[in-house]
Image 1: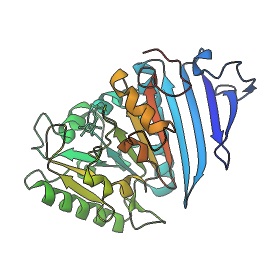
Image 2 (image 1 turned 60 degrees about the vertical axis):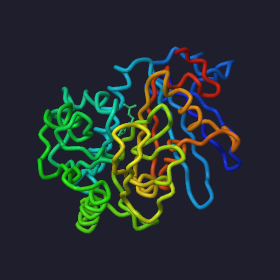
Image 3 (image 1 turned 120 degrees about the horizontal axis):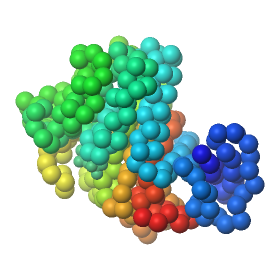
Image 4 (image 1 turned 30 degrees about the vertical axis):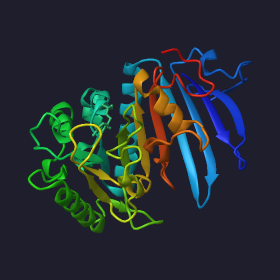
Length: 313
Ligand SMILES: O=C1O[C@H](COP(=O)(O)O)[C@@H](O)[C@H](O)[C@H]1O
């Protein structure tokens, strides 16, 4: 696997280096700046820059196929789980819904089904549709059917929303549950805010650039005080949802955004590239942990509109 590493110096100027991940040897840069000049299985772009009052650490992994992306995603989650269990004794992970869950499927297979310390996992949802748990639209049901029922997770460690109350009450309830688990340190606490610090928040991204249930131009994006908020007017059905707020997402130790397919390419470009203030901003572009690390998992189609990219969809 070849890796392209691009870090940004203090002024934001790119310093480009190229190396092979398998050998860790530095290779001379290619004559063209095009990513596609590598016959790589995956291209990884690492950016790091100082932000006002913060730090930005992000990495872009572009995969040749969904199969490779799924393997890399399973490796990434398994490694973070191992590190967190070693450091804290538990792994607090927040899931999303949508295509992400299918792409996590390799975790149910060897070696991960045997090597991951599932009993130490505590599961949450970064967003949930306010429907019954057995409803086809439920993010909980999707994860349960495709993932949680296939690995030995302890049922009491699975924290889904209360599906018998209104969206507002479900958001309040969920925040209460999270507060209790922060108190008992199942979930860490951020040292720069009072927010929970999840070990990993996994986000999908819609073609409009929404992450969790934070949609473009929606007031929920501005929520600063609550950990969990609710909406009743989601532009994507179903309309009633609860969602982690940006302060919670941006307090996590690790955030991954997983996006595949042509329909996501424009939103990936708007979120990742430095598009300037004249272009519309998308929620995915403001998901960036202040002290943690953001990793984007993309296929070539989703990466096809990135600046400097010659991936063909
Ligand atoms: O409605 C939702 O959509 C997003 C994206 O879903 P995808 O199928 O386009 O990957 C998902 O991340 C979110 O959790 C879900 O509620």
